Image (cartoon, rainbow, N blue to C red; front, side, top):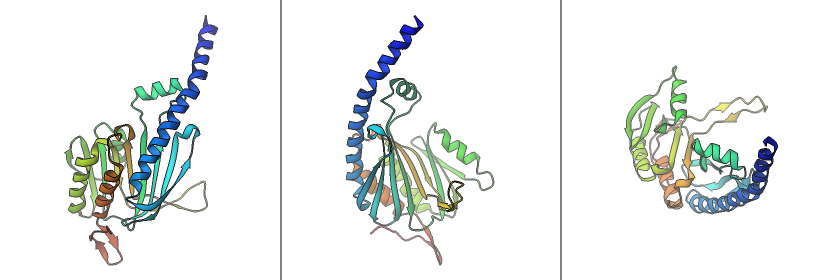
Length: 239
């Protein structure tokens, strides 16, 4: 009986593997087209690198960037649909197709911000580790918790709230930080951390305009006051 169950499970896995892979391949191509349409708002071109089979993980790098960005990368990861058991288990735990944005501004922001949608444990974990330089909690908005530290930049906070009000239905986590060189044990050279990190649920983006999303993100980033050689430069960076 045990052997029969094992064989049945093995057959199901083998039969489903190409089916789930085909689903991911089609979704990967669809999301690639969606992202490329939106990333035109930030730069002239974007390059794609596939990191897993069935095009289930891809990385886009935007070239010839417009202000206020100095670098901009998008990683999109699809659910493990080629492995039906792993897919079901992770889906039950809330795993979805996800977009991760990593970007650097032209200069460091004068104020750091942390944003987490209700229930995002990473928000609480990160803030708990910042006891030596704590964040101050701001009033919540539509289920988003917001915290700040550093200099004053009320303008970018107001624009952030506008961005969340209009585009927040897909956002899970955001972080605006100072960029610093980080030592990497696997490399002789330090690696620069990112100013902007954003995680979004891609399954909610089907009805979302890619141009509107990335244009709104750029407008908010352009409102962020940044450091300059003379001190704080709060002028808009959009061109």
